[in-house]
Amino acid sequence: MESQHKILVVGPSWVGDMVMAQSLFKVLRQREPECLIDVLAPAWSRPILERMPEVSRAVDMPLDHGEFALGRRKRLGHLLRGMNYAQAILLPNSWKSALSPWWAGIPVRTGWLGEMRYGLLNDWRKLDKHRLPMTVQRFTSLAYPKDHHGMPETPAPKLEVKVVNIQAALTSLGLEKGRQRVLALCPGAEYGPAKRWPTECYGELARRYLESQWNVWLFGSGKDRQVCSQVNAAAEGRCHDLSGRTNLAQAVDLMALADAVVSNDSGLMHVAAALDRKLVAVYGSSDPGFTPPLSEKAKVVSLGVACSPCFSRECPKGHLDCLRQLTVDQVIQSLADISP
Image (tube, rainbow, N blue to C red; front, side, top):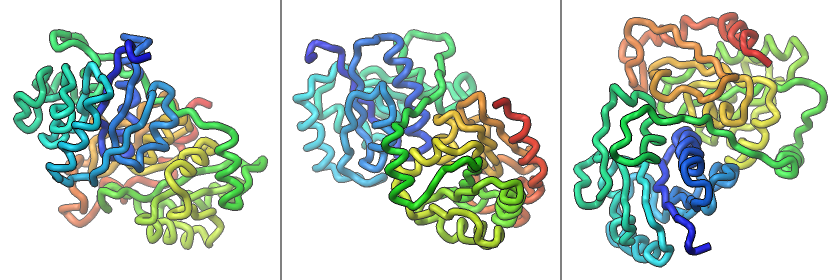
C-alpha cells in the first residue's frame, strides 16, 4: 500500500468549495486510478469528505480559518513528514496554507502562485482568470502537469449517502418521509443579506407547495435560525424547521430525500447539486458564472440587473432589486422546467 502514489490535498474552508473540490479528486483518480488521496481540511468538513468515495482519508486541520499559528503549522508539517506523500495540491491561495506541506518536505507542492509563494511551492502555476473563470476549473487544473494548456475536465461532484444514515437522521429528528413529496428550502447565506432571496418570498413559496400537499423542510445552520423562523412564520408554522437542529452529516443525508430544492447561493446549494436533487439556485449579489451548481438537474435564476453581480454582503444601493424583483412564480416555473 505504501508504494502507491499518495497525494495530500489541502482543502478549502467553505462547504461549497469543499463540495466542488470533489471534481479535482475525480480527475486525479481518472488520471491515476490507484492513487491515494488524503485531504487536510477543517474538522467540520469530515462528513462531506466521508461521502466522497475518491477520498482515502480526511486529516483534520488543527487550526481555525484565518488563524496563523506558525508554531502549530510547523508541528503539523513535521507530523505529515512521515506519511510519504509524493505530492501536495493546495486549493487555498494563501501563503500560510503552503507552510505545513513545505515543512513536511513533500517533494512536489502544487498550487496557484497566490500570495507570492515562490519556494514554498515548487510546482506553482500563474492563474489566468479569463481562461479559467470558474472555481471548479481552477481546482481541477491542478490535477494536470504545468505544461498542460487544454481546458481541464470538470466532472460533477456526486456525494454518496447511506440508507442507514438517512434513517438515523430521520429518527433523531422525529421526521418521516412518507409518501408526500418534500420541498427543501435553504433561505440562509452566511456571506450576507445580499445573497438572500427575501424571507417573504420563501414563505409564499412554502405556502404554495404546502397547499399542493408537499412537506416543506427548512435547512440551515444555527446562524440561519432567525431567517428560517421568519420563513416558517410566513408559512403559518407548517414547515419542518431543521435550522440549527442538524449537524452537517444529518443535513446532507436528509437533503438526499428532497424531491426539489430552492436555495440561495450557499454551501447547501452545492450539497443539493452534488446529491442530484432538482434544484433552483437563486443568485443576487454573486456571479453564477463563477460558482454555479454543478448538476444537470440544477437551474440558476438570476435577473442580471445592471448593478449585479456586486459581490457585496449588503446591497450598496439599498433596494436589493436583483432579488426582490424575482417572483415566486418565476421560481416555481424554473422548478417545473427541470427534467425529472
